[in-house]
Length: 495
Image (cartoon, rainbow, N blue to C red):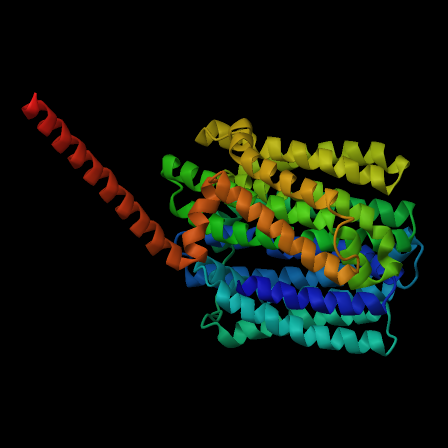
């Protein structure tokens, strides 16, 4: 719930700034963000998950990772600033050179927070991380809105990004008890790098190919079109990435705890898969159905071009958390080699799809995304099928009831679009309420497993009611059985 609140504040800030700026300015920012994201993966170097996977990292290991990250982040910052003119030449946008120089500062800031964040994640302390992100979101949001209002344009997005990271990292240092000692050993990094290097390779591939659409659209189309695409992607990824990131952080630690018990790991994986299906499927269907009123109300008509993009992206978004869960199960088993192999195969598929689809426009590229996401889910679940006997078709069978109920909800909402109020706000409110009621009712009627497990947690009173109901039903059954025995005895004696 805390994470949802932070994301809500972030969404509100994003909507306010988007109403002030133009799609073109978001497109320009997206071009440079690709290179920042790649550099951040290099700074991480796979050590974050290596530290989590390690049962008890020593102070020497933690300090060595800290100083190594500071050094790498400084090198990456210098390289990004130096690459600014080449990036500007590639996209034929001179403003990208100074943007790259300023955004390089963000990399140095990030290098100071990796160990603190990793230790909090290892302890499952997400509350502290929430407050850090919330502080950064609120302060940076106010700064970004103020800069946009004063006409700073694309620089307001840069200022927002830098300040958010600085405030969050500062909060981690104020609240964390860990401090680096004046010790550094390369040998302390070697054992972790054997595990983390494969994750580093897959991370680099993931960032490059995850942003290949941004790179291609920015080069082949206009910054305006790229701005529309990235806005649709952000609206889709806001809930999806939120769910996936929470799952990845919690599940990797949880899966690691039972990594030696494959039967328990399989049960945990299945329970997580159906729980994610319960939440993700109706969410993506709902956003797809309500894409038009959401965009027109929140962002105004200047962003109307992203509506169709958003609707298609929701299809791909429905499967994203599921494929991430399978990867978490693999890495928890220490199989970073399979992780890297899967990433290479998926990226080859993605590259082939992009090479064919970009010639037919952005819509064709998004259809390609849907195909890639489906294949990625199949590939990610292939090895969990072999290792844990919980593969693609078994997972599909478990998720099918939730997909069916979500499709039923979406179909009824689509057919009832002409009924009721037509104002954007009223449409959103009434459709959300109606969709939620339809979905919950259908889940209850069909007694879907994940829904029935979730009910007592959401409404604790139901646990007592359900327990009393079961006790009463057992009493009636036992009482009826005793009466039947008594009647049978009387009849026998009479005869």
